Image (cartoon, rainbow, N blue to C red):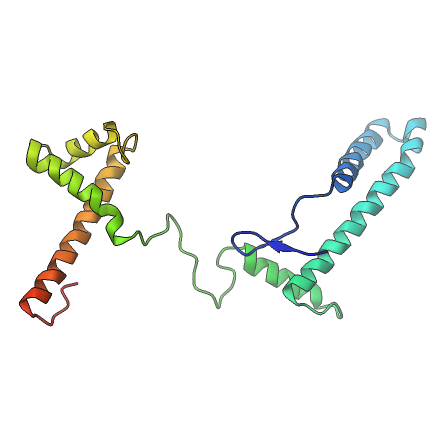
Length: 187
């Protein structure tokens, strides 16, 4: 059995075969029926099907565990193999479990491109200078106007505007320092 990886590099067994899905469904249904009937004459009929489904599911589980050992390159001898597998799985799926790795940042990813906010910056600045609007009013107008900001929250547009303005001012300082021949870093 081969394990593929999802877009984040985590192990993925893919879609279950129909036979396995049917066996799992049948197994759960038969366990429920058994509990409800409390071993009357009908549950004795279902016992072979229950055992067959249980065996199929157990074999599939063993194959999947073996595939995980193979995926992580863990030797299948010795008792520590299960501890090694548990550690590998925890590193992959429990945020910040790996003490040697960098901490996973929380929240929205940072690092928007410098130029990404510039069209917004210039659009808001134009409305402020041309129409005499306040920044919040200009952002509200952009959220109603056809374009990339239509339907966006005014506060979000305003936050992006101020981020872009800060970036624009930083770039402007760098350009000024280069043009005047200054060697200091303005940041």
